[in-house]
Image 1: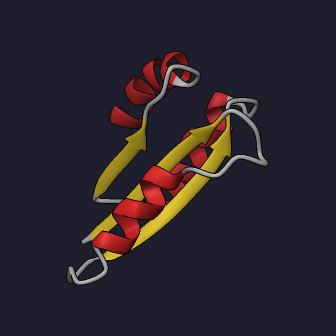
Image 2: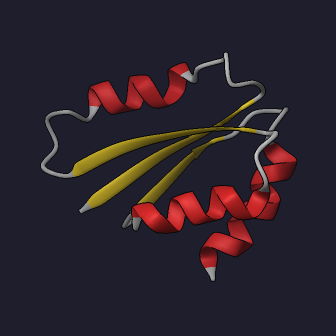
Length: 80
């Protein structure tokens, strides 16, 4: 099983602690866990393509006030 932990940061210089904490705490599980960090300045289609390229079985997205509108637009694309 492949898990993709995704963070949509406000800027490239920011890093998401949330996905790093989850990644570190799930190391004992018998699944492949990857992290994907992008910025709110990335195009929606580019983010969706990176998720599709990873081909995850489970997708986790870190949601915050600065990225929630982008996440709301992204989820229907990923669901298709």
